[in-house]
Image (cartoon, rainbow, N blue to C red):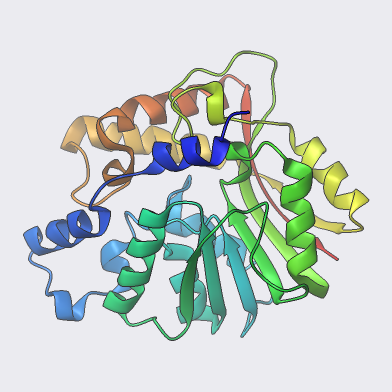
Length: 274
């Protein structure tokens, strides 16, 4: 049996990630004693449209002072935004130990250690008690998870009664083969794309109610077209997702953009409530 978790962790692994970010901040002349969230926003939101879409998702419901779990938290950008702007107490969990180390230190760097904490763990085996969170939030995670029923069942378990699940994700739409590498997978070994209808059925079977579903595909296409144009004109950003995706950044972005434009992939966000 393949150990998908270890292959997935290896895909996302970047050695000395925190140190690379710190070095790039210093090269920009940023005083490390005065780093703000905006200074690291280009690298700490590893999903299509970055911080902008996180803010849109947060504004779709009342999140004030919520106890929130970010599943697949990455470097913790959304967690810090939710703590800062909505008073949330946020726990982030991610499979990557390097992401968790970096997220923890970045929160310390920008002053959010008291309102965010980060745990290394498996999204299909959440290390939390039943009913621990008011809200579960996830962005670009389920593509790497084979057992989606277990994934959504765990989200259901850790939510309180009437708890809310927010998602923003990439789904399969057409029947064409996916061209790799993609940001979440170098090949098909750790890519488990499925249509959004499959997710919706699983959640409804778990007694969730669908409050909102939004097709984000056109927004994603527009974002990527501008992103590639900027790279062509100005080169890679000084502190951007290229730090996480490395030398294959442009190829991965181009493949994802092509998949969205050709109708083979779709971007969707939404809200479900228990």
